[in-house]
Length: 295
Image (cartoon, rainbow, N blue to C red):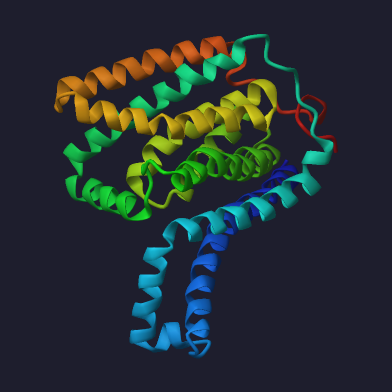
């Protein structure tokens, strides 16, 4: 019994490696760009760390080209994540079935519902921890998230869903399932990992909910493309949610309406996607022939 548990637990190592690879590559690109800028200016390899003036100039360069740097970071993560997923899992992947005709339209209400619930959760946190939410809003503004330009849309609506689904539902859910052997437990663990990758409490709380739903969708069909589509709708609908917040009066009533409407839309979307039928499949230990790989 202990030997079996230890054999399964070893899969938590690549689970953690996938999370830290995702974060590490972004940090590597960030500091690589900063150091590269200092070298381009004629400085030394360590000037960014040792010379305050060089570091300040590099920081200005980073702010000016933030969008391009974020896109580069996502492309690097995409290349590394896809290569790992394809070599370890993708070549052996066996999806369960295709969604019935018209079912994928459910990603629209489900994605919009998740976004409205996220708005309500952020508002609730603003009441409980106002300083935390204020810092979060400043971070989002500085990062350019939510801006209406082609670069921001490409980063948040196209690349981010693809990259994050490969790492979280493609790699981390796979490794969590090998470690825990029950889908509900593996889905819970990968959702926690997805929340951790956002590196702040405000996003982490609603990212956990999104991770559970995206994991359930993957559990239903075993197709990353469906998760990417739903994730893209969630991210894209943030524009409409922000617009609604501007046009509608603020306050508890509006936020309660947002959250209630979001919950109804989410349930309707999941119903259309046929997720309730197998939202948490495999109550018994997962067998390789019923998952996406073969031993």
